[in-house]
Image (cartoon, rainbow, N blue to C red):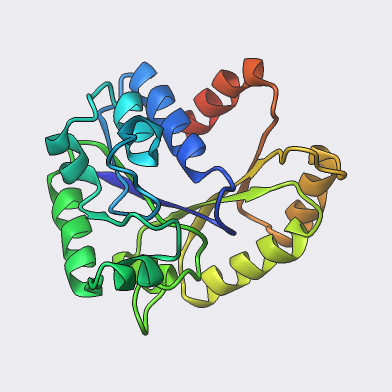
Length: 223
């Protein structure tokens, strides 16, 4: 089994879009792929189709049924907040040991490729004392880091890389998803990040939808 943890420098950067794109590309190449989005906040049970969980299930060619949603997203919270805050509003809490065990159990039974999508950015709190970074460190999977091309992304991306490397997590690739309305050219952003990310695969994802398939296909072949 090959597995990757998909994380980001922040929320609404494009983790789900990248994860779903990779699922489709891997399936097109004949790979057996599964995905998890174990923790999700902002989940509206009355509008399941709009959820990140539904997007991943659709990419997997699975219906967003209650059973399938439970299978890949067991920790669901209604409020669009950090998981610790969202859970607290429902008088609930995330147990990190249970979360890690869930992911490990699924990894142990995966036939080929497993993509685990995180929640928010790498330092988003899961409970009173743990963050997504602690979750990633406990699993020890190589990381796919999704970032944007907006002004300010250089500091956010390099900070994230430094933190991940300090926790001895291998960053397999950085995916720079072109931000809407960015005042900085995508290629220029990539060139700067590349100088500080030696040995890390750097992928640029332009907003041009016609190029997305090609980008994901090339990336999937390297995973």
